[in-house]
Image (cartoon, rainbow over all chains, first blue to last red; front, side, top):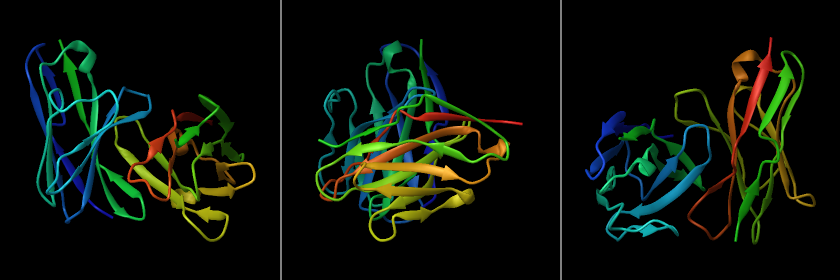
Length: 113
Length: 113
């Protein structure tokens, strides 16, 4: 298993600003993932972040809007840039531990006014 | 492309009765299948997985799931429901050569006292 923490747990931001979300894991992992979830809805994968390489973005998500850093095997950040109310969501990071099994952080609840 | 379907938005079960939450999938090759649970205002928790071996897999909190290759299904089951099982349940699938997991839209389970 893995213990994952995220900061901040929640934030309220003004449109046009940017927020960086941090994800910290208690062990070294190769693959980290960033998801977005509307409350009570399914998870949508934003990107896959491997240490030492550029993040791989899913259709509909671009690096200019959601830049990701992965400086080492225990840490990653996701920035939500130039925010609009449509970006209001829960952002989750996860890590793959074994054979496709993922563990999730508690999430960051973002509200954009 | 892989996909997963949860045909029921909500399932209501009386406490003490057996419960089933349905899931069907589509993937090229042998699937990796997962169930996750999300309690209110909390992150996703891993319940169980199927990769190979026995078609009936047992997981956390007394849950189990049955892999049926001919019906491409992976239904979640529990013999006797508890009120505390009330939560949002996600089925997920990954192809054998994929890095990412695709989540279903979720099924809200209500256990009635």
